[in-house]
Length: 256
Ligand SMILES: NC(=O)c1ccc[n+]([C@@H]2O[C@H](COP(=O)([O-])OP(=O)(O)OC[C@H]3O[C@@H](n4cnc5c(N)ncnc54)[C@H](OP(=O)(O)O)[C@@H]3O)[C@@H](O)[C@H]2O)c1
Image 1: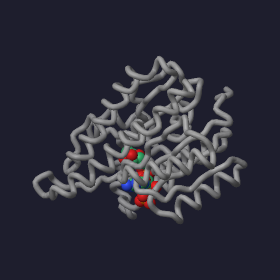
Image 2 (image 1 turned 90 degrees about the vertical axis):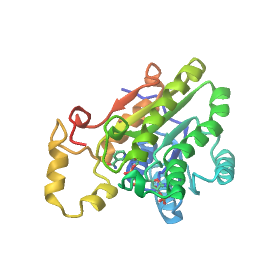
Image 3 (image 1 turned 90 degrees about the horizontal axis):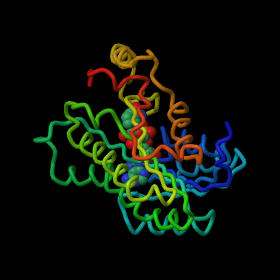
Image 4 (image 1 turned 60 degrees about the horizontal axis):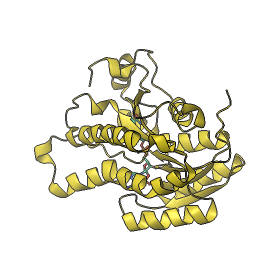
């Protein structure tokens, strides 16, 4: 199936590694030019170089997505080097530090919600006007089973992920008639560096994660990236305001 996505411009927030990197590269393979945004300059530059090696244009944006002014400058750079992005992937919202709420300091609450929720809101807010002008837009936020399942020590992470689902429903109602769709792709676990960092040779824990899937296979980042890329394409025009469970069936059990 032709996705019809070639020549479009995507901004992948959190594109420096993990799922965001896989998504940036899959989009590039489908002919999309990609702006790669994260804080670590060496990582965004490396991914931008990989995008260029695939024959597409890229811009590396070393930027903290919680800094609204910095985001404004980063978007100016995307506009001047590529053009306005009409595809926005939100893969930056990744702070998950398991701790019961009474042990979380007030400034940590703010840092987590700034990263895992408010940066996504701000990116949407800044990208929507150009999507409206283009009468085409695709917003895909990476979510988590934690939005529905209670996860011990993950109160704020769950709250942020549930709010992202509410955000895409609201966006869908307000913007879909302008050709702009908004969806969450929800993940339980994916085989990223982040996961290997947490498993750290603990085979028992890894086995438990495998058993938590229905497929008995932890999804590879490229598999999640395929789902996201489809939703970013014109072919997915009928899908908006939804949560797509790319969990290998992991959302069906209550192991969390
Ligand atoms: N991997 C999983 O198993 C899994 C499971 C459920 C949900 N998810 C969701 O999927 C998304 C991606 O997860 P991942 O595993 O790929 O995470 P990851 O490997 O930790 O990557 C996160 C990316 O976001 C960037 N980032 C973090 N804070 C940022 C900030 N303030 N401003 C700009 N960029 C920032 C990071 O780069 P810098 O640190 O350099 O900024 C990095 O490029 C997250 O929303 C996560 O909650 C993942």
